[in-house]
Image (tube, rainbow, N blue to C red; front, side):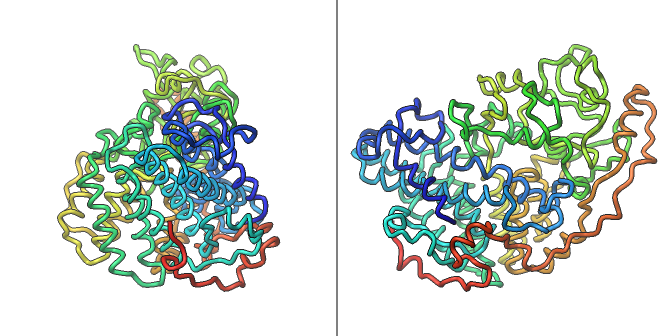
Length: 579
């Protein structure tokens, strides 16, 4: 964290009335009107003042969210990216932006929290808004500690700014950082309402779901599993499952549609809006979808895509005749699109014939009567393209979110903690305690798996490997898989190294040749003989150090206390800090 972040932190001290409604989650305010002394005067202004914590400071994290969460974990192929081969260094711009984004969220959360603390608004709204600030601060720290390991604690940035010691802060041991996150969430839970939010705001059970996940992660941070943390993770997650009033969505693919930006399934999400101010909006479709996917000329992600290894996990084989393929897991098509796939919720204004509309991936590439910009060349380097984080074309955006999309600007929410995650956290916490036949763990696991695989026979006993694989299939593409590896690597590093080295992380050549022949033959001639997996690119050099990423080089230059050779401080956080 360097001096640059002071501008992000200080920006939160200035507010504007340019935010119009409590539910819009509008952007970070501009910095030329309404200081904190005369802004937080009533309930509505306090709620509006928290809105931008749901989007704007997170904007520069989006690319790192995918590259770390999905590319490093082996879920996604991204060419010669250093995230593919673990050659990442502290000058990588996406890593730098991610770090600054997280510190910005922490700084803004601190400042808004302190400002609302002195507000004259009602006690209930004050508590709600302060709780939301703390939950977002905890989430930002959760990403920081899992990414960089030992990190400084900025409890109140105004204190650091006044002291001028921003560039002298010391790293704190990651076990203590986890304790600080837990303490922060406990205070958030004290403040937040138990009533289920219907607008997408964080309520008590949303924070408790995050609390359970943090406990599960922190349980192994010392190198061996802490049974007390596992018990607490199990209890907290079960409380969410049984008492939050939330249910899993019936249809998995519906979770990711804009009309369900707010749903029982979405506990914590970046709630983007295509507003007047840049950084309030989602731009993930641009990085993940192929050229021409929307009308704005802002998609360039077709040359990356779900990996061969992720396809293997789903039991998907690009050499199989698409007309004979049978998907048993609905999550496959909701995660990756390949030859033969058609989507009713993308391009719903485009005619497919036979009275149907939608998106046909092969027509998109090979049929100019359907797509005048069809290039005749399939882009996906592993034979498939992404699905999650895409909204489609402007007609789809309007239909789902009742608003027009812009260039690199869409309203589709990014879910970063889902209810099914809490279900699987509960199952894992129970199994790691040796409770492999726990009734509540089995119910939670079978509910998640049963939604995805209608023919699945309910499990009567669980293993860690069952949950490990289920998490991959459930959350593939959602920026979380690398952090599963980090959590496990705390106490089983070699197992993680072995799995990453054994993955099929390379390209699959010539899929487009087979696809085009099949399409042009009227779906008759299927010849996969030229499809070939790249066996030549070696496995990445994964070591025990790979699970902690380097600090941005500029930060270390300005604050040598962040250097990899500097020992972190031990801090008794509960004795040192309070809210």
